[in-house]
Length: 295
Image 1 (cartoon, one colour):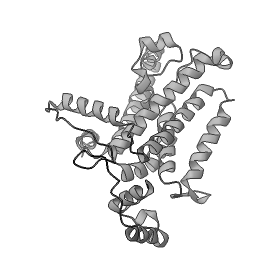
Image 2 (image 1 turned 90 degrees about the horizontal axis):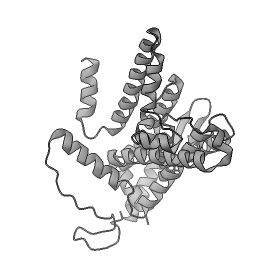
Image 3 (image 1 turned 60 degrees about the vertical axis):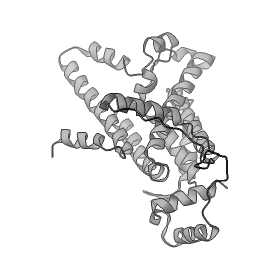
């Protein structure tokens, strides 16, 4: 099977959001690297800079008004190899956890909302903080804010879930997320303060998303609605009218208690975790554990 067929297969499935996010980031990177090399060799480097300005998020408000789409496109744009490598590794590791537990749509919602939150923190810091005024005009690219949102969302959802890290061994993801936030705070004093502040915006969004979700409020509904509209537009499908209900609503539309699993079942799931680890749980068992955490 050709590479083109593999890409087409990735986007033909509706339950493949994580791979689709990864592929979009990689494709944009490959296209930019290829065009950058060709334009450099032909002496047309300014053309590459002009192209990048169409994707990067400007820090000045007039630039943003001219390129409003960059509020999202910057989160799929990378220039450095190690930049995209570490972002995609983190997105894969933590995205697998979030996707398995909350589903594809909520993973995409966290990524997109994390990108917007990072952009908001970035723009506010450059335009309101006098200390950053000398940097005004510096654009931002990279999925770091969106990926940080996914990392913190995963850590907020399952703080004691363990990753086996090279040289460190088993580490609970709440400590990994805390390290990411501390590193971003320390980086505010670096040559890229806006980017580090954007990470903090993504972190705040990831935490707020999960906390609100546990209270029955899904911040990602507008993202899902827009995605469904675009999907219907591209595929020419008739849109179905969908009525959203809070997780606390009964099928009849009346407010009622969450359908919590029995305590005996939760005890069995916890015992299974102690014996075989969280990874041994089925998707249904993980969902039941999540519902139990909302009590």
